[in-house]
Image 1 (cartoon, one colour):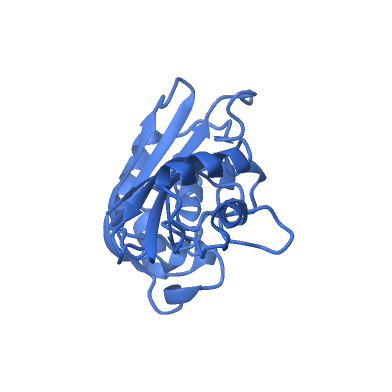
Image 2: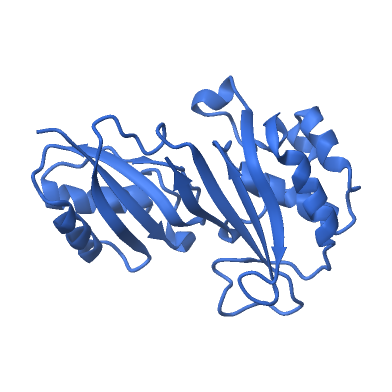
Amino acid sequence: MDRVIRLNVEYDGTHFHGFSPQLRQRTVAGELGQALERLTGRRPALTPAGRTDAGVHATGQVVSFRTTSAVSVDVIKRATNAMVGHDLLVREAAEAAPGFDARRSAKSRQYHYLIWNRPDRSVRDWRWSAHLTEALDLEKMNRACEVLVGEHDFATFRTHAAQDDEAQNTVRRVSSCRWIDNEPAPGFLRMEIKANAFLRHMVRAIVGSVLLIGQGKLPGEAMAELLEKRDRAAAGPTAPAHGLTLVAVEY
């Protein structure tokens, strides 16, 4: 009997070369797939809600796969966690509807980007936050983020060669985008962004541009101009991967 299994997964992306399988590289899909192959006898094709890049973390990743194995979801969770590294965890395993697909069935994804904004680096949180010493104007940054809300062509913030449908369609719908001061603790700035889908490196490219606005290196009205240009070279640098976390997927 063909079954669809849904996994809720979290991982520290520091030592992973992204989600997707890569030859002779440690990836999330590679490690999960190897464990599931040992458990079910066949390596499944894993579909993630978001294809996180090297160094990017997840606390709310969703992964789906098909299997003919009769192994229960409770055993899938326990056995998989016993076989993967300490930086990867299956939080939940459940039966899904026959047509469920973690990527195509998703209505929205939410990411957080975390900045440690103090002169000295953070020994405890360096894996999950980018360090920036310069003072930032949070009000200007939030006004820039307001411009992104709605349906726009985000070609300016696509950093690598197009993949899949990105070659034809770079329009995405952002439902919310904001920066919060002193979250999750004093010294941090956290950007929360939610959209129906994201282009590759889109969030990190947006962060890089918003930070330039916050530093006064770009004018406050620059975000609207950047969207109109559809030119990656006009925008700011791509922010470091380790500040980014996929936190939630809605279905």
